[in-house]
Length: 125
Image 1 (cartoon, rainbow, N blue to C red):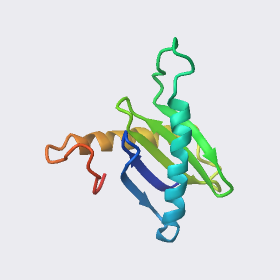
Image 2 (image 1 turned 45 degrees about the vertical axis):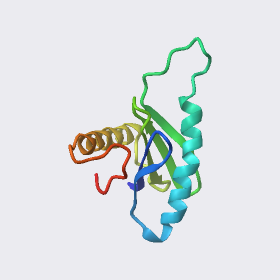
Image 3 (image 1 turned 180 degrees about the vertical axis):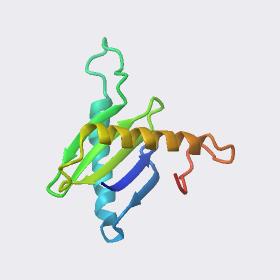
Image 4 (image 1 turned 120 degrees about the vertical axis):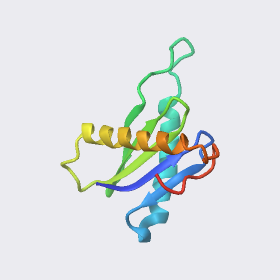
């Protein structure tokens, strides 16, 4: 399934990043940060007259030979990026959407904690 899950703040600072393979953690961090450019492009309005899109799920941001990178942006401009293995051809779009919905619910629960200071990195989701 997912080899890397990250939550990025509105100022593009990582709030949470976890990987399944510690040997490839630096490479996966690079992939996540490279995906932020694509997220910014997809979040830009096409023209000044068009309203902002209400779609939070950004879909496939880009793919490489080994990974597929998907994105999701909340209304408060918090970005979720999930990196999955390209070899997993059975993964469907609705399953990726479900992963983002679950991640968004977990993030919301963590932020609603009265001991959480907004903008601070999350220790666990």
